[in-house]
Image (cartoon, rainbow, N blue to C red; front, side):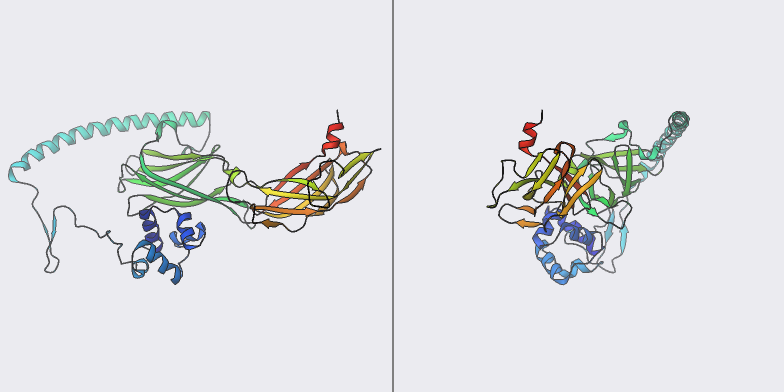
Length: 386
């Protein structure tokens, strides 16, 4: 086993998630994920701390030929290992009396199997003809579609779906979800089935390799475009018959809300108190004046911690698609007392337009490169509009 595979196995044995292990080490979940996928190697300080947490020597984590405690392989049933030279001897499993009985039984089974093979071949031929007709009627990528009748919803004893948003401006799809998946089937046939993970969302489908670990669970990692909801399956394909089992891990939704930058704004007076008299925006005789101190307040209603951060803020005055005025906000400041971010600006604008024909927009670019907008209205003017 590699160092990453050992860390993953010991983490699951202790019942830690990647995020929980990262917190114990003072690191991010992504750092732990990179260790487990062998994209990075822990420093010696981290190896010492991992050794303490898992109760294993550092040498056990580093040496590929060093087995984990309690994971030594046992000899197969019927095989005896002698101390002298580790000679292998097999205990007899058949007696003279049972040989003829087994031979007769084998002949009966052979006849039955041949009959079943013929029937299965006939059924498969009919199914292929039916699929060909369906494909002619409605072309689609059959391999990317998980059929409802093939889904097994209670076939897993354990699973985990971990995800985080990632932004890379150098990629065509700049914002992606990094997925780390694990699933332990109740029925495991690793020699007879080809495993992979399948992710589906709104008619789209992605797959990634599933690797079997020592605890009989499959693990895999991949990236998909940002989606608000998706469903994950462990797909097992029989090597001989091609029969597919789709083991449902689960369906996740509302993901974009976890990474959505939420903010609002209010006008402040000279004392830093909320200004509610509507004097910051005045509009009369076909002219609009916007003057005062505007505060942006950023928050996240779906999580105790921010998963999207404000990077750049602007105040924009528009007429339709035309930008009449704009200005950069101050640098974003973090308030540790209430766990919120703030930004400020002081516009002093006058335009020969009625405010009813304009849009005053608070604009913020988040840490994932996405631009969010919030419309600023004035209470006094809105109250006067029929």
